Image (cartoon, rainbow, N blue to C red; front, side, top):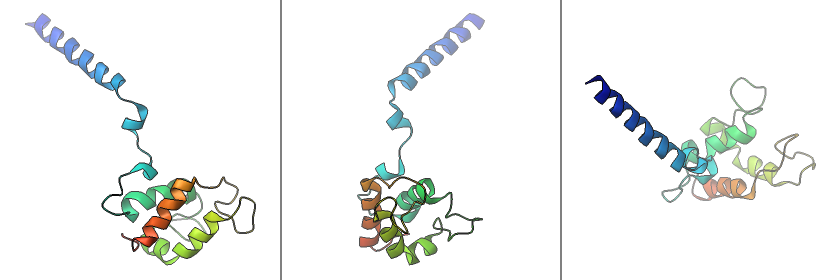
Length: 120
């Protein structure tokens, strides 16, 4: 009986490893920008993770800057956010400060969120 259980354990482990190695990294960890927006671009699903990645170091709870991870703050500042992330790197007011320009796909997603009515 012990040998039978050990054999099942090894079989299960082998199947688990096979499944794990058959997955691509992109399937295991998705970027916020890649989430499905077919039902609308939502702050909680699409925008907050993006802002956390690119802006959270300075614009989150407990920092001296406005917390853009808060829906109301981001919604109220959307025009300024879009303006500043679309400026050329090095230009006055460019964000993220001391960082690289956001990928155009991320900027487009934030613009889409605004165009769709700033869904929470």
